[in-house]
Image 1 (cartoon, rainbow, N blue to C red):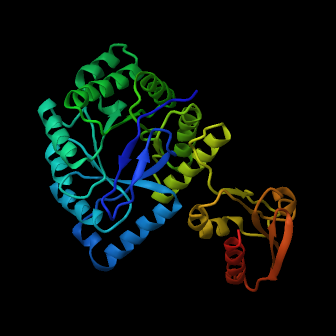
Image 2 (image 1 turned 30 degrees about the vertical axis):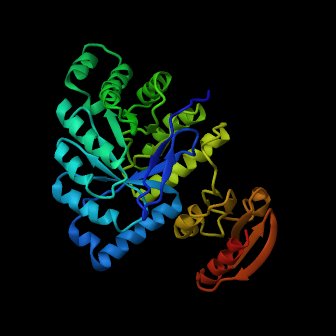
Image 3 (image 1 turned 90 degrees about the horizontal axis):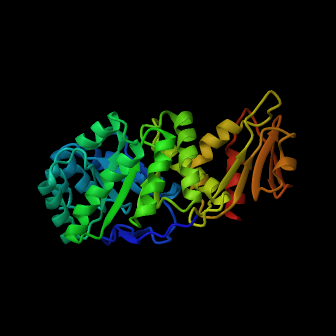
Length: 373
């Protein structure tokens, strides 16, 4: 199944990297900042640390970064941060349309509003008018937990939840169409896998508007990754979904890494827009282990996901799972006792000794081999 979508430009403020979403462009990974920001977070040493972390998220493959904006002060802080980074930033706003209006005074790349709680038609139209004048796209975010009142009652009375979610999105899009607002994206999220898949399939049958997909309130790292994978891989394999977020009760870096792996899985299922990057093969470790795979992955995860090449990296724990079982890997590392082996395509290229568990020499050697890929 191939689904044509409209193309939409995000960003492009000079200091902000522009993205194309939809229209056959590669699927974009998003994450959301986990904490509330204050002015002290964007000043001095804290500000430098903040922008460096955003840079690392970008290097790992994050294309859009969303921030909750609960009040006008938060809008001011986000506005200051937007001028400091090249990552396109998204303002996520509930309840008060005036916050959205203020965010639009800054180089924010996208606004996200929820039709179930942003207010009446006039408030939505005020945001639309200003966003149109600034050429800023708006994501209509529809969640199962915050449907408009009449649709909530409908679901309670037996209406199909997926149908209700799609109707909520279509109502808001109707207002956008009346205004001639062309910069709309839609997200339709539920906490159940079945509703997420059904609602997004149904919406795509009816509209070419770009779709952001994900499972809301998916859970902690393991549960959330499994639930998002179960919902998103089938959709992406069908060509549905232009941006994704793997919502986890965990670190942003793990959301991005999970998103990368979901796109890899979708590529294996035939998605032409889920571009594959690095593939990490690593054994789980057992009583035979001679190499600390867990520690190596923890140290190297961000750097490996920052690779811009479609390569396979193997991190193996012992001779059983060493070069022999990782012949497909472009580069790999394993060990036994105090010896470390680095290999390419199943052939050992380096061996070295470590002393007192010091892995610094092995890390340097691996860095050199990685640079040669």
